[in-house]
Length: 132
Image 1: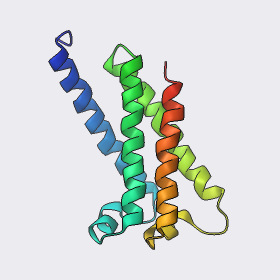
Image 2: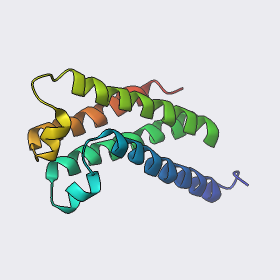
Image 3: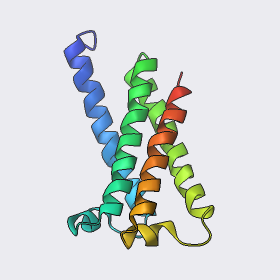
Image 4: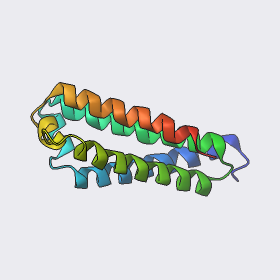
């Protein structure tokens, strides 16, 4: 059935959307604020950080789909990439001892929100380039 390109595209799309929801939920659990409540209030920093995470996760799927023959292989590589992005999030928090990243983003510090977005996007390209 996956020999049909329309069905295959729908399958990859469905798995990517489901994984995106799961991965964002995990990110939501590790941040000290509620992403969607903050975005609803107009917090641009949270929107940028969350947008970077969404872009990063989807970009990992892009590379995984391009470089693998099966949905399972793509999901494994994208999941591995997500774990690396999650680790990068904790490293970013650890390497900034002068202030807490989550607190600054929640307070709508746009410089920190932008930097968080760029880190997620940039690292997704680094990880994606290594997907085999």
